[in-house]
Image: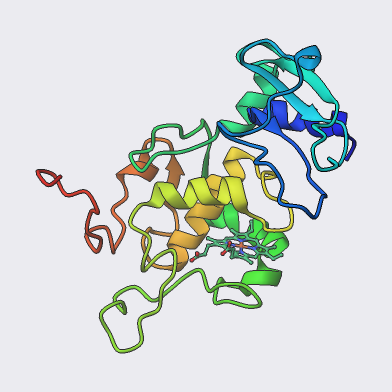
Length: 225
Ligand code: HEC
């Protein structure tokens, strides 16, 4: 990475000052209050961001490259478009806030699952190279608990959120809202959480009560610091 490219990425990361040292003598601190200040001819405005142009010889501060003043735009990059932000702004809260329009049923989800998921999670979600996804309801307190999306996860909405952002593993983010509703229904039906004909959407999904809904304790119980 060139010094300028490094400067750019550091300015983006909000870093203040960086330098490389390749000398064998004890180096001067390069960061913090004891760091050598650039010589007067190289003095930078207060709050400026700079990097050196290359490795430092002992006692040489390198050639500072002014990248930009903190708080001011470094003058490169561009604002994300509304479409780009919308593509990333997809979180769904446990109460269903953020769920998109659309709907799906288990029977609509079955062919999508067969095409996009079965090769990793098994033909019916029983597990394959990747996790088992269905079944195990009621086993959590048994000698052999089976943790699945149906038996373990406390909120059905989390399943929607996870599938939409993370699956299929080899192509995350490629499923439509209808497909995610249908796959969520397929998995929940496979665990016996919903009936085969149940249609999931932004209203019915948050209303589902998962079998292990009360199996968790809050790390921040009300009334405790
Ligand atoms: C290429 C293999 C692959 C494909 C295809 C795939 N998955 Fe996954 N899946 C994984 C892996 C690996 C994990 C574990 C990821 C992790 O722990 O970060 C996982 C995790 C999951 C989980 C979380 C399981 C748990 O209990 O934590 C769910 C739910 C899931 N996948 C559903 C699906 C669905 C639905 C599809 C199809 C749309 C799909 N996956 C396609 C590999 C795959």
